[in-house]
Image (cartoon, rainbow, N blue to C red; front, side):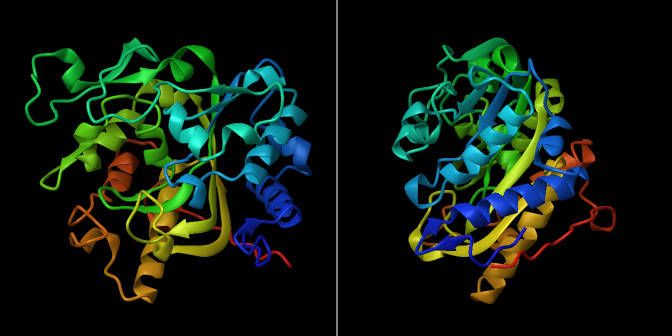
Amino acid sequence: MHHPGCIVSDAYQAQPIAGMMRKGMTELTGAPGWVDAWRMFFEPGDVVALKVSPVGGRLLCSDGLVLNQVIDGLKQAGVRPRDIVVYNRYRREMYEAGIAKWAPEGVRIAWASEAYTRIQHDMEGYDPEVFMDMALALPGEDITDERVRRSYVTRVLTKQVNKVVNLPTLKHHDASGVTITLKNMSHGFVNNVERSHATSTLLATGTFIPAVVNLPVFRQKMVLHIVDGVKALYNGGPGARPQFIWEHKTMYFGTDPVALDKAGWKVVDEKRAEVGLAPVAFQKADRANRFSNPQVEHIELAGILGLGEFDDKKIEVRRFDLAP
């Protein structure tokens, strides 16, 4: 959904955003209206997490207008406010981006850890029974310690909710090429993720991301993805460097994270070509990026695992330009 008037002077515009959300949801579902579209995914009794994306801080994060449109849709489907959980892995990151203040009264705010640390073995917010085990560790750690080779899933996902709406932004990532739907899940719901991109020569996001999202709890509970590309990032990610942000003025709706990430990857590469940069897969380390040759293959591997569709011939991307 593209709307030329959805952002003005760096501020999201309420009416265009509402129009994009309504058109996006009804076209995605084929439902006759806004309420009907949400009822195709949600019903009274559901407990739903909204996975926001505040890594870009106030410059580039899940927007309040988009967030509240989603909350309205859930309420219209009969989900009670106390059964809606605005979630991010790190509390401090979410509050610093301003996301917590956007949630209306009655909606819950949740997190798994207080803040980012390089060694991520805290367990208070994580489920000791649900994890991804991989022979991968930060340099110097004891691989015989099971916490070192495991990434445990947050209790919010395993114990507290039965469905998730994934709300990523459209961004470049210097380790994984892009960070859209798949990485917002893989690095947003488990601990011990630093090991996936520990050093400039120890990079494993290509296998780490799909290994996490392949866990049954992700397959069962991730029901809807809405990608906020009103503003997007084409280089220097995942942090939002102002010189690499552009107004894409587009939002993406889907149920297939692999297809969405494939489409988003193309958009980032198109923008990079426009400004004279190499495709993300052939990026070289420089002042803006720590890694060379980011592992964007995580999208293809996710497709091989059956997490979605990677083949362009089998992906239908419908594009709508909404009037200003």
